[in-house]
Length: 297
Image (cartoon, rainbow, N blue to C red; front, side, top):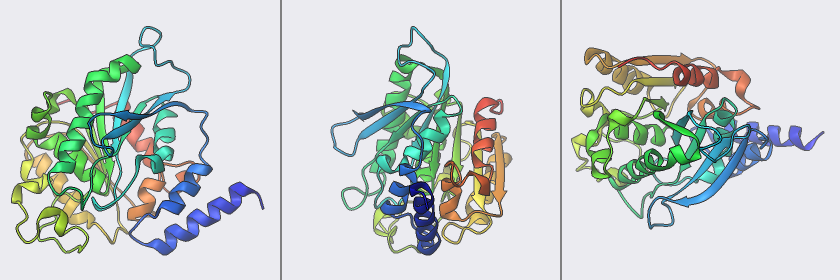
């Protein structure tokens, strides 16, 4: 059996056995079988002073980082999940490859996690990474009028807070009005009271601030959204979080698209962006449709 085949089996077995969490080993195995021909990568760019405040940029291979050569590509800032306890941008090269293969500049950012910080510091980090992107993406060939924020799980929460709650981007001198859209994959948007023991200390349980919930901020901005979830998600309840947020957005006349897949779980929803798992759901196609044709405000 080829190395490619063995790694796919490893990824599949660990993902299926792991349930709600993504371990480092399967992601590294997945990245090992992810081709690098679609992009040029610039790594370890600081957007703050902390070692966790760094990001990587993936530029479609057919373009150049010299803005005088090519400009005008959509830009996607992606935040990964991990219950705000762990995660690394280096494990998500498959997301950079997937989105850059569709012609988008991709920024994948780390952010500080518990126990180093608690809410709202990781939201502040996310806002700072988005602000850095708005200030620098044009120099890499990006179109500042087509900047999107995207995340999976806890990262979808970060994306939601940046897009829905204007105070975080305002702190760093920018505004949600500068975003063309945001994309949430299996995000927790309304999860009080907190039940997950890993998340309780992150949000100061039992004294969790009510305004820590993205659903509380619907109507404070009009950034269009694409919300995708899995019917089989046993970690983040889709009906309460994705469907509930979509209903609130519609009530406030904020553009929203809402999709659910039958063949994915909480974990495999993000994995379906990768080439080996792309057959289980058209996640990448739907994300690309939204970026290429976002709803009007």
